[in-house]
Length: 100
Image 1 (cartoon, one colour):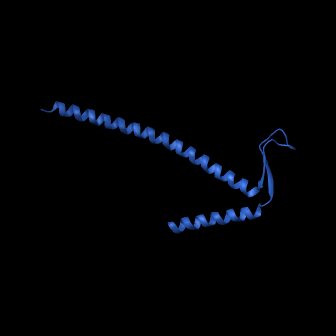
Image 2: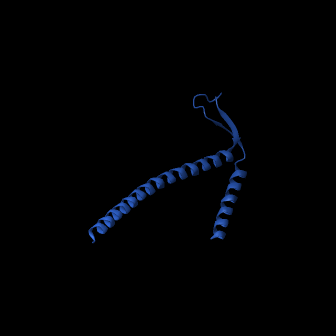
Image 3: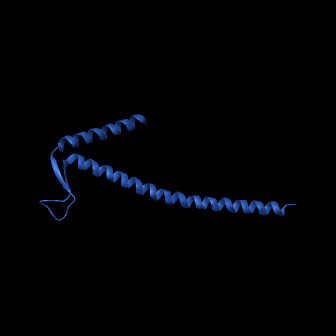
């Protein structure tokens, strides 16, 4: 399994290098939607850097959403488990009380 992971990571790395080499041109990334000629906040950066940052941001946002959804599911499962344990303890106490 480690070999498969290594090969997959190597393939992703090679694809990333090819994308970076093919998109070295500088582009202007502007966060000002109103002024095209003189934006208030703009960055000149290689296109591949923007692509990689967008990819990383997507992975992080997706990871947080998956973790949040899983947290809610685990929280509900934990509450159900605690309810079952509480019912089991109550039944056990009732049975011990009824036996002479």
